[in-house]
Image 1 (cartoon, rainbow, N blue to C red):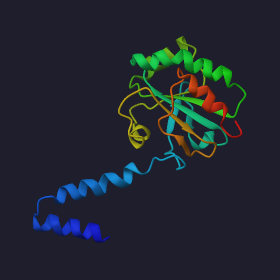
Image 2: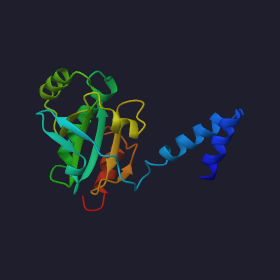
Image 3: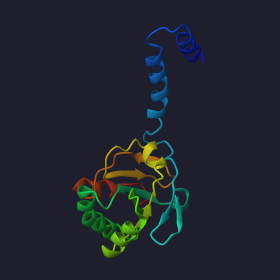
Image 4: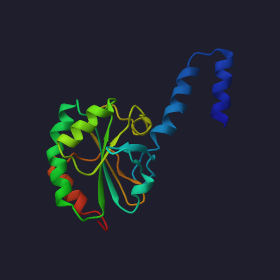
Length: 174
């Protein structure tokens, strides 16, 4: 409370540097919110068939999230590796969620169906709340959550990385 009071006094008095204090106070707490062990922000997006899926609905399984788009070359290059990863871990307590940031839902649906993509396919439809919470500036981006929806790794390795399968197989109770 004292820092906020000091900041307000600096601003009211017009002392330079008051804005720098405000920026530090505004960004530091937000940056600290996405550490391993902390609860992940929830999401609420429709899947390829229109069904609403939330993170809470996936509790009880590990969640490997792929944030991607149909127009992203590096994202599309990961798709075959993601499919292999899903096959190798079939029957395990993990769900693969591909969260598209495509704005055109019909283009995304066609892409998913043509490529016979598995896992849970979601489309953000312009709602970037989840991506903003994770400070996602570029895609593809991979995130691993535990069975309770807590962050294991907010910047998980890609499916094409051989270490990814090793890491997933070492998860407790997978």
